[in-house]
Every structure is written in C-alpha cells, then in structure tokens.
Image (tube, rainbow, N blue to C red):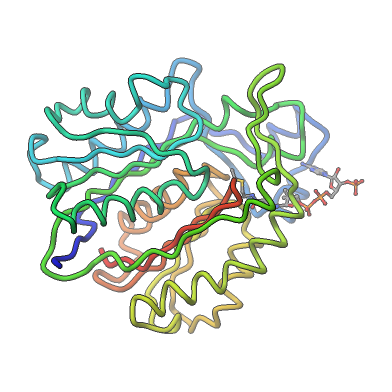
Length: 313
Ligand code: ACO
C-alpha cells in the first residue's frame, strides 16, 4: 500500500502574552513556583472574539500555502479540539469554507490532548486507503475559555493556539504506525467540568505519575513499529504539558546528544490538542529539526488517552 507523509506545516498563536507575573497578580502564585513545577514562562491568550475556528483556519491557511496545493485538492479536513463551542457546523467544516476547500469530508475529532496524533493517524489511514489524496489535519484549542481563572492549580498551565499539517499520498511511508489507546480506569483524572461554567480540572499528580511511568514504553513501541530505536530519532515532540514530564520521558529514552526535544511549553503553556503540531511547526520553521530526520510525536491527555507515531517531514 502506498504511504503518506507530512508535506507542510503551519501554526498560529494569539498575540496576547500572559506572563507568570501577570498570573501572580490574579491568584496566589509566583513566577518561581510556576517555572519550577511546570517550566512554563508565558502562554498566549486569545481575544474574547477569537474562536477555535479562527485559530484553526489561520494555522491551516499557512500549511495549505506552504504545501503549494490548490484548495480543491484537499479531500479531508480534520480538526482535533475539545474546546470548540460550535457543535454544528463542525470547526473543520468552517475551516474548509474559509479556505475555499470545495468538497472535502470535514469533521472534528475530540480525543483531548491526544487529539492531533489521533487525527494524524486517521488521516494517514484514509490517505493510504485511497479515501483522500491530500488531507489537512489541525489541532486547535481555546483553553482560556475553559479555564477557572480563580484556580491557581490549573490557570497557570493553559494557553491557546493552533497547529496544522498537510498530509499527502507518497511513495514512501512518512508517517509510521500509530501506537494509541486509553485507560478508562483513569477516565476522571482529566475533565472538562460543566457546572457554573465549563472549566478544565485534573488530578495533577495522578496524570504526572501516569505520564512519566507509561509514556516511555509507548514511545519505544512507536519507534519499534517504525523500524528504529529511540537513539535513531532526530527529534521528539511530546504533548507540551509540563517540562518535567518532557525531560523525564526524554531521559528514560536514553536519547543521544543532539536529539532535538521540543520545549515549546516554556513559551506556550499547555495548548491541549494544539501543542504537538504547534511545537513541530515552530521547530521546523526555525530550521531546528534536521530535514527528513525521524521525529517521534507523542501525545497524551484526557481519557486517559495516548497516541504517538514517528514521522519524517
Ligand atoms: N502556585 C503556587 N502553589 C501552587 C500552585 C500555584 N500555581 N498550584 C498548586 N500549588 C500548591 C498546591 O496547593 C499544593 O500546596 P499544599 O502542598 O500546601 O497542598 C502544592 O502547590 C503542591 O501541589 P501539587 O498539585 O502537588 O503540585 P505538583 O508538583 O504535582 O504540580 C502540576 C502540579 C504542575 C499540575 C503537575 O502535577 C502536573 O503537571 N501534572 C501533570 C498534568 C498533565 O500532564 N496534564 C496533561 C493532561 S491534561 C491536558 O494536557 C490539557
């Protein structure tokens, strides 16, 4: 069966920067605590009027322009999101409309923070099965809209943004086999609680222990299925939730010096399903990933769910 690969990337972040000192003026916290426990220094916050669809379309437009494709060539649009307010029409359908994509199948996918890697695998499967020749895969979130700004344990973590990838049919496999799953015994560890207002809640330590304990095996399995060892990776882009989780996973994979490990969480905070494509697109744009080198994508979050694969782009 022919393969598929990521041929172009794009990203978008709102212009408003929220610093740790800003947050210290809102809740009982400090720049030192946030940096020590999470690694986060800043995050971007969307304007009240800026929607998930706005951010998704902005990132997707950049990826589409970089791909050189005509909008009519896109046969599939997927938006991974858990914060889109509009249920119908889907955010993906809105993006297709704004970008002038005339007839693609367009749908949203909610797998929390694991959404982008899940959508990427689904697009890869669709393209390899011949259901579409070119796909737009987007992760977009407005976490600020589901943040309890009085809760210091969560409001310091979250940010807004979007990342997008164009996936196209290719002679060689550029998207490796996905490793994905979920653990329903921990389904309550990450939630969007909808009482007085929809807001993000999590059992931070449960997720931290689970992520640092389970993800290295998922990463090794994704590498094995792609036919390489972690030492053969050029880069690692995990979900950007906490710098300590990122560093712990990288340490446990015994990565040789020179392997680029994405640390976009420092500037962007946790942008849920947007974090992996955002970090990947920014690293690529800055020329920090060796072209054609294998990069492990690894996402995790509510479910608790995980999805990861090795890509070359
Ligand atoms: N500033 C100051 N103190 C704080 C803050 C804050 N912002 N937040 C919590 N504290 C306090 C707590 O009240 C607690 O005080 P106490 O000891 O007096 O009770 C103390 O700091 C320690 O709190 P913990 O919650 O135990 O802190 P921890 O070191 O676990 O860090 C964190 C919390 C950052 C949330 C961490 O647990 C974490 O990152 N977990 C993983 C989360 C994750 O990966 N989620 C991903 C899935 S969800 C998604 O991505 C959208």
